[in-house]
Length: 546
Image (cartoon, rainbow, N blue to C red; front, side, top):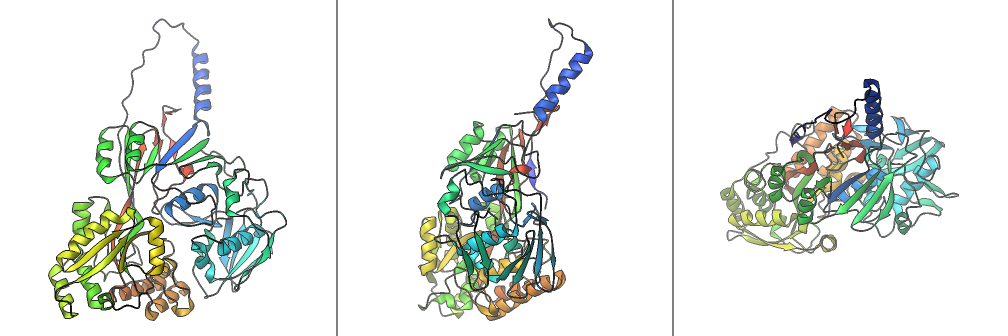
């Protein structure tokens, strides 16, 4: 999956040499040129990178949540035991290596890591961080369910950590290994056990707003944090030198601000620019538009928690909804080039993608027949809940659903209210987007549709409360599979089962969209985020163009 990008080459200026200037020795000119080149192109010459986005982190606390803004922020300041590259390949981070033993997964920590506060990394910091992430009060508790599969953490020595999982999981525990690690306060000691974490002392979320805390190990450290602007500076203790930027500003911008600021060069990069403006901005020149396939999935989920009678309990009604949605038309006419129609989680070309699930099966006449068979010849009416980010998509879907006799009242609410209403069950269907982890598909399946069956906790993103024992057993078996081939086959069976039950309706994968000034070089990732260390100033004839 290679990103596509429109690029323009800047014109070459003409330089006149020797008119009215004193003649200098050739050796002196060459020496001066070399000094200037080395000085200007050395790592760190570029002063500030400015990135605009519509979403910012909700908290400076790296254990608070997993929204795009949260992940983008803590991915620069904090690290986990492991990481993934732009194509979901698992890479070492704070752990230099790991191996699976009879007792569990053993991680060997790097010995050259120091926190931004100067303290060396040890297993005490890892245990403290995972205990904290598991028990953080007043947070979305994203990591709580992730850590529910961990039975115990044991420090074999200050740089050797044993992670024992509850479910005999044979996969590399990526979801756990990528949780941000923070510096444990002096004197704090915790023990991670299956029932609870035991220990005393901690760090309040509010403390992370203080730049003096310096609790991360990433290449950048926080210098200032406000809801609309975050300033990061180089971490001088980072083990890998050559961070390309002295400081980085992350700025919250609305749709018009994204366009205005990229055009007037107030920012270097904008994320998720309005679709209608992308072609116009590209035509102005001096920018590169980046579109890349991503693991962002938009889907419809049903309210399985409600005990009130509902036509959606009939599988034929759910199948009718699926047949009423023209995914290919959405892709070609309403969002050309920006989405890829899909009927399942896995991206095209993935080894765990089921060949039996169509990406588009639009048939409104068949949908009407199914409704009639289910006892609703005159159609049904449902409440379709959505947040502002998905409102436009939900309105388009409602138009097509109505053609098949499914009248959807689109109910847009604030992001905060949508969360509360999902929990209370105040909806029939919700339209949602989710960035999933393609490097750990068993965890993704469980997160989105997993119930309490097969000894697992309900999935942390299974807001609708779907529960099917066969699906749970297939996912649990995939988690414990000893080979990639066996795991892929089980995941395909789980996808087929969810499809047959019309457990949900995947609609499309969204491509990540970025606009960057031509003076910077960037590489989007499948997870739709960026790593600042992978963004570099463009050099021209040995000199940086900033």
